[in-house]
Image (tube, rainbow, N blue to C red; front, top):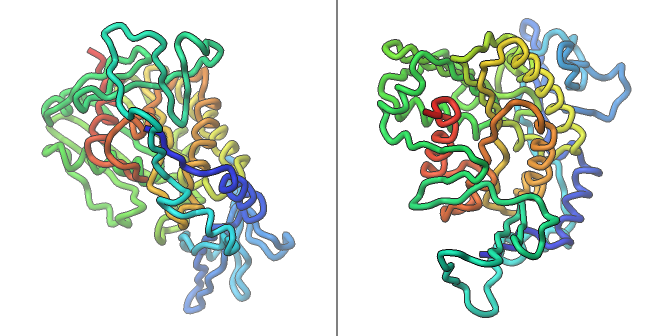
Length: 381
């Protein structure tokens, strides 16, 4: 199966949007003191003199964040963080380039036979996808290869990882017994928290009175001594309104983790950085990488798992979150964590290889296979 995700003309526009309109998605904060309340725009970078900005750059990680100063209130009165809206603008000609089923995510039919039969000992096997392309006999210079494949709905990894099947709640509970599982990231990581709390009867989610979308969340299985937490990553998180003091950065959170052989840390950061120049994403990942290295130095038995990006359904709205953006960030993530003792859940290839349609939030069968990969790293026996 071959799919045209974007023609080169679309990629040219996507590059231009990130360079010329880095504030394509803007954010807002409410400032309040007594009965006086003001709302101003916030972002990684704002076009204004320093004296007209509130500087909320994180002192610990160095992550930049700014808001326009309120007219009547001071910067210390900031209460909330929230997504504001979209600024990215396409010309009429550019809009014609982004049409689902016309020139975006279009299946390219075969000119001849569309099916092949593979013999028991295939010669010159050709495997290709968006991420990698390998011809075993004729193109040895390309060193990348697919991460795995599905057989009877089960993910088989090709990197040597033995992916076990945890098909019952008892099997999952036994693997996680006595363990702490910390989940950090965006809604694609929140999916995993929801999967675990919905599939394990003994794992009860505590009502922390936090927003349904943002968290933080905590679940506990007292009988099996299992603790699972979720916290979204810091700005530019595109969730609903949340307290500004809860918009924390993963690097800071990791430094408070005790770690050890009974701790699993899962990180997924990608989708919310698509509208920004790649340098913003690189800076965030380097900050997280340093924190991961500190954690593994302090507690080398800790299992750290990184979730990659995944392709999704695309519409003209998704110019803000295109697969092309995701692919570039996916490549950066893999390169930055190369050489660090972390495990990857290859969401990109696990989504591409599955027959289910691409979605920002992969469907349940894919999520189940991803959870099996995590548990296999925790319980390889």
